[in-house]
Image (cartoon, rainbow, N blue to C red; front, side, top):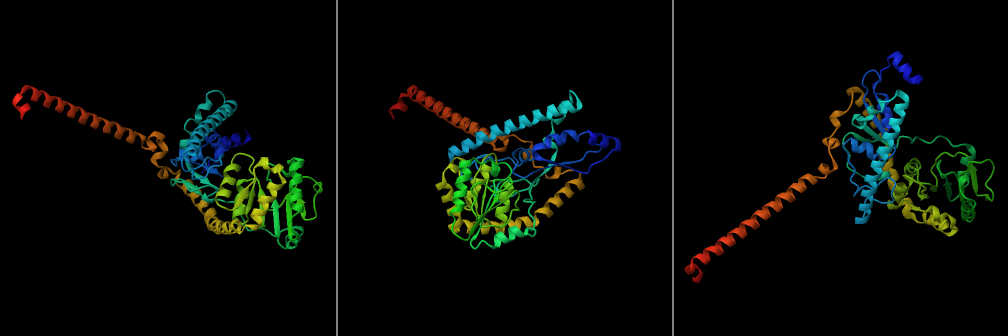
Amino acid sequence: MFFFRRVESESIKFDLVIAEMLFFSYACAITRDFPGSAPLISMSSITSDVAEDSLGSIKHYSFFPLVVSQNTDRMNLWQRLENWVSGVFFMSWYINKLDAAVRVYLNELYGPGSEDTIGDCWSRNSLSLIASNSLYSYPRLLGPNVIEVGPLHLKTPEKLPQNLQDWLDGAEKGVIYFSMGCTKKGKSLPAEIRGNFLKVFKELPPGYRVLWKWELDGKIPGQSDNILTQKWLPQMSVLVFIMQGGLQSFQEAVHYGVPIVGIPWSVDQESSVAKIVDAGIGVRIEAADLNSFEKIKSALEAVLHDKRYSNNMKKLSAISHDFTSRGLDQAVFWVEHVARHGGASHLRPATADTTLFEFFCLDIISLIIVLSFLILYVAWSSGKFLRSMFGVSRKANPKLKSS
């Protein structure tokens, strides 16, 4: 509340409001009464169905997999059907849940009646910045007001702490980096699964070393000498990255050319690991298969010894460097552009205000079908009428009949 009181008392004006896509409705509602009329930009680290659709870049679920699915962009009939049904249901559910949460928030903050201010929020979205690109999903048709500028968090690696540098230098064949990110911590792995990884790492041939992100003090029970654990580890260029499929870790692995063993646990990790496998830059281990020592070992050995994974990753890494070299400049340009011109209605295509029925030309197709049937019916009726008339003529004129 202090923030709102200060904005009101000092009549602070904003040139632009940038809001994370998941909280865009909140930002839209609470900034409506700010002095002036600042344009809004939504931003997301992943492809944003709701933001992109509202800006006219309507997703075609026959060719673009839902972010929580294992599908690729080459789906069979049943996968496309599943993707469409899931996509439509998920979007409807998500928008309803988000709007309901915003209405409750506004009602508590401003009182009854204020919740109606979110009605046209998504139409106020001037532009969407995506902190990713098609390397981490699939190419899709985008309007001029949806800009892929990511990844934005990649920087030139700083000098490593000496203990890590010594550990890397002492690995003759290479280093394996094992991290489950922040959603699934290493300390939370069941003892059996943790034991399987420890056994796989212990049996690695001489010359391989392992960096393990471990959140507790001290060593892991049963830890072998070729494993180094720390509570935090900088993402670095290593030989193989064993991870959960988080987008930022995925982006870092591609940028630095590190093949992946992906273990998806939830949400967008499913689609990220599906993309990893489809691009031939890594392998997938199902969470249920972590109870199998053999399956973990087989997956790791495949990525270590099959050169296809490292070769494919090198190609994607080169592309990633091209994209990243211009991403930040693009983001700055578009932010300044929207602020300078008070919005970006000039970039908004007519598809932003259409329906799926019109977008897929079902109205035109329906009209063509109806007119075609009408023409065929008229032709059939005319033929039937002429045949009946000709038959009556022959009966009425015996000479015509005999001839």
